[in-house]
Figure 1: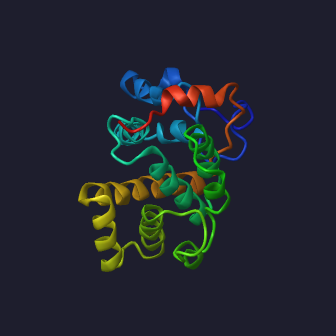
Figure 2: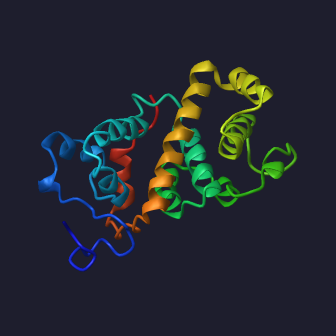
Length: 206
């Protein structure tokens, strides 16, 4: 087992990052959802039984042929979730994804705005779809539920399938935030050419 002293990637994490050659081959293959190291994925890989299924789900979020939500709406949900939960690592690893897919800078700059400001139709860069997505996020994270009106408005704008997908995505990234924060996952080392690699690894919705 790696200790902090002999693992250069581990400074804060409360559990070791597994060595790839010590993982079951089927689990090792699942880590290929990204072509570079992410400490959160390796942390998840400690759970040999559940990790393959969770990594498949995360990989589906990355894949525009499986994910139904448009890329920037998915990322809006993720960045708001990370911001609300104060999950810096989650925010930091997703911000380049949003940038690669051309999220407007004004939305990035205002992602931490109070709910009351976001829902004010006279303020901010938000579309009606953005506002209902952010209502779903904010209500879920505050109370683990949603107002009936919010769901009705969301179904009208997004459709039933996308409303369910939104709530699933919120749950996935809230779970990841809990792992990140609870286990003190380390910030990743700098990745040369990150944005070019992201263009190939995380695809637009088709």
